[in-house]
Structures are given as structure tokens and as C-alpha cells.
Length: 105
Ligand SMILES: [Zn+2]
Image (cartoon, rainbow, N blue to C red):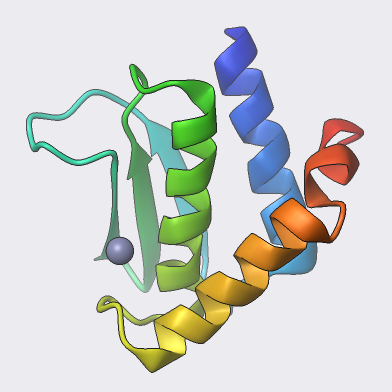
């Protein structure tokens, strides 16, 4: 496992611990054609998050936080519900000790 993949796994574990979604979420790091850093799609009663591997690790992490807010709320747009959840996750991550805490996971 690469250093970046390991770091992203820690972030995923941290999200599962503190921002647990109601439906199952899978995270895959893989190449795709579309010009995005990541995706969240509904998938078999849960959600599938795909992250572009070639982006710098801080972008992969921010993409995962962004997509996680979609999965956690089951909300595919960028409206109020997604915004509130994303803000909570983002704030916890950057200002609430999430970055350091996740390194121990
Ligand atoms: Zn989005």
C-alpha cells in the first residue's frame, strides 16, 4: 500500500468513527476518465465514493471529506443539507483536531 493510500485509509477510518453514515459507504481509489477529483454515487442500497489517485494527497483528503458529506446525508446536490454536513466535517477535520487524531488510526 502506498503512503498516500495509507493516509487516505486513516481519514476514512476517522470519518467512519466520527461521521458515520446511515447507509454503507465504500471508498475506492482508482483512475477514471471524467475530469473530477472524485465522485459519490448511490450503489446497491449504499454509496460508492471514488477518488482520483494521481491528485496530491491533500486534494484526495479534501475530496474524500466532500464526497463523504454526500454519502452521510444521502444527498447528491450541494444544497443546505449537504452544506451543513460538509461544514461540520470540514471544521472538525481542520479546526477540531481531526488531522492529528486520524494519524493514530
Ligand atoms: Zn459534491
